[in-house]
Length: 346
Image 1 (tube, helix red, strand yellow):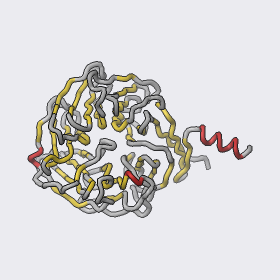
Image 2: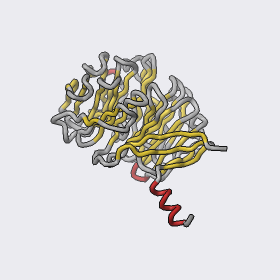
Image 3: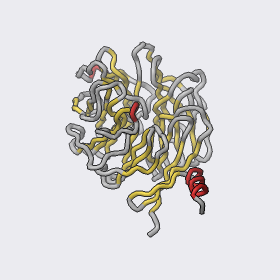
Image 4: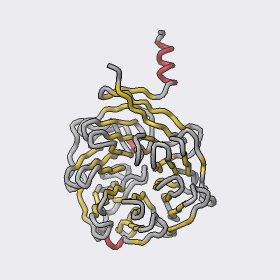
C-alpha cells in the first residue's frame, strides 16, 4: 500500500489508537451542529443528554445514533454548560453568565420550567451535581468574595441559597471554571468537593450536604486567569483526581494533574502525567480513568499514576454511563463521540 493511501485511510477512519494492550476507537456521533457542547449527562448506555451554546439541548435514546433537539424556548442566547439527567424524561440544566437560570423538564424536554433565576451582574454559575435522585448542589463564582452555593432537596424543583454556610473568603482573582460542569463532584453521605483556579487553586469540601465547609490548598498550575483545576473526580470519599493546567497553552503538561488519597487534603503528582491541558476527567473504575481536553484524550489503567495519550482530537467533557459501560465525549463545533475499548489481538 502506498504511503499517501495509507495516510488518507488513517485520516478518514475513526480514531484508532493503542495503549495497555487495548484498542481505543473514538467514533463521531454528531458533527453537523454549530453549538459548543460542555454539558453531558449519561444516564445509561442508551440514554444521554447534552447541552451547550445557542441554548442547545439534545437527547438521545439509542446511544447517540439519533437525536431529539429539545431547546428551551426563549433561551436561544444562553450557554447551558452543565446538565443533570435522571432518566429520559427528567433533566436539569444550568447556564453560565448573567442572568443565571436553572431550568427543569419532566416531559423529556417538551417543556422547561425555570426553578432558579438571578439577575445579579456578577452571578456566574459553574456547575452542579446530585448526591442521589433528590438532593443536589449547584455553585457559582464568588460575589463579594463568597462562593455562591445552591441546595435542592427535590430533584432541582426548588433551590435554596446556602452561600452563607461557606465561611472562607476567596482570594482576589480566584474563581471556578465552567469548561465541563465538572469542577464539582459529589459522593454518598453528603460529601462534595468544589475546585477553583485563577490566581489561586483551592478545594472546598463539605461532608454534610453543604452545611459546613473546609478549604484545602491544591498545588496545581495556578496564578493566571487561564490556569487552575478544570475538573475533579472521586471514586470514593478518599480517592480522587484533579486535572487542568493552562487552557491558553493546551499542549503543556507541567503540573496539570494531581491525585489524593485523603479526601483532598493533600495532593501528589502521578509518575507520568496527562499529555496536556485537560478539562474533564472520569473514573471508569478504580484502575481505569480517562481525561480529555482541547489537545487530546488520555487513559490510565493504574489508578491515575501513569497516563497514555490515545487521541489528538479536541473535546470538552467525557462521561461514563451511570448504569452501563459506554463512554461519551462532547466538544466544540457540535462534536459528540463515543469511546469504544477493545482488547488488542495477541
